[in-house]
Image (cartoon, rainbow, N blue to C red; front, side, top):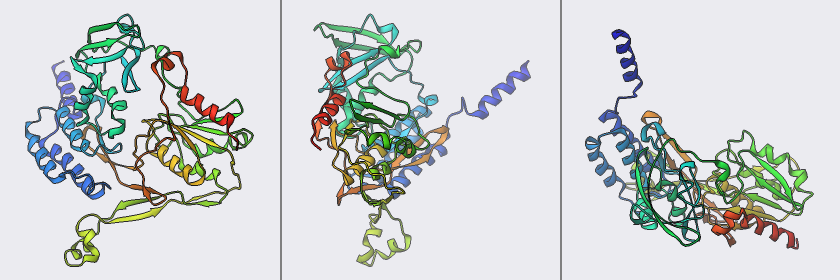
Length: 430
C-alpha cells in the first residue's frame, strides 16, 4: 500500500499538478512575450509605452511571485498596457480556478443591470435591478480601477469589464448595493458558491444567439447569423442560401457578439459586387531585416529598419468563381463584442456596397493574433497587423445609427436593434 501511495504522489509531481513553475520558466515566458511584441506588435511605436523599462520592472518581480497564479496575473498586466483586443494572456481555468458569482450583468444607457441570476439568488435579486455599488465602491469607479489591468479598448471597456467584477473563486465574499425597478435600494452580502447554477431559459438575453450558421426570412427580408461555433466552411454555408436571399427585399447580417475566428469569412462580401475580383482592404505588418537595420545606422534610406519601424503592405484579393451577384440593400447589426474577422467582413462589405450599420461601436481589433505558447497550457495573443480601407487606418466600426435597448426592452424580449433593421428595409426605396 505504501508503495502505491508513493507511486501516486510521484505521478502527480511529474504531471505538474502540485509543482510550481521554476524561475527559469517564468523568465522565459516573460521574455518571449517581450521579444515578440517588440518584433511584431504593429502599434508599438505609436502607443508611447516604455516597453523595455516595463520588461525590466517585471523581471525584478519574478522572485517575489509566490504562485503560478500571481505569475500569470503579472503577464496579463504586462500586455494590458496596450488596451488592444487581440493582445492579451489566456490563463487556463486550472490555474485561476474561478467560478464566479452567478449574476449576469448587462451594460446599457450608461448603467449596469442584472438580466440573470443563479437559482440560489432568485429571491434576493429581482431581474432588471440596477447595480449601484460593489464592495462599497461605485460600480463604475471599480471598473475604472480594473481597467488598467485589462486589455479592452476605452470605448468598450464597461461592456467587457462588467464580466470580470463577479468572476472570482469559490468562497469569495461580496457586498452589493442594487436598486430594483420599483426604486427600492437593497444592500446584500453574497458569496461565490460553485454549487449555484443558472436556469438558461430565465436569463433575459437582449438578442437571440445561434451556435451555428442560421438563415431565415423575416417578412420577406433575409436574416443571416454566422453563429458562435467554429464553422468548417462559412463561405459554403452562405453560398447555400444565396438563391433564397435574392428573392427577398434585403439582407440583415447580425454580427452582434460575433467573435470572428473561422465562423465567418470576409470573402462572403464578394457576392455583393458585380466585379469578379475585388481588393477590399490592405494590411501592414512589421518587417525585421538584420542587414537593413545595420545599414540604417549610416544610411537614411534604411533608418526605419534601424528604428524597428519598417512595414510591409499587402492587399487582400477575393476572386469570384461564379457570376452570382446580390443586388439588395444590406443592414449590419454590431455591438462591442463584434471583433476580429467579423469587423474585417464589415470593412469588405463597405468596399463593395453601402451597408447601413446599426447598434454600438465594434470592439476594434481587426488585427489578426499571433499565439505564443506559455507553460501550463497558457498562451499569449499578440496583434500583428494594421488594416487600411480606402487609404485610412482602421480603428473600429462606427454605426450609422447608434442604438441600444433599454432594460425594459430587454425584460420584454423586444430586440429593438433587429426591429429597427427590419423597419428600415421595409420602407427603403431601393
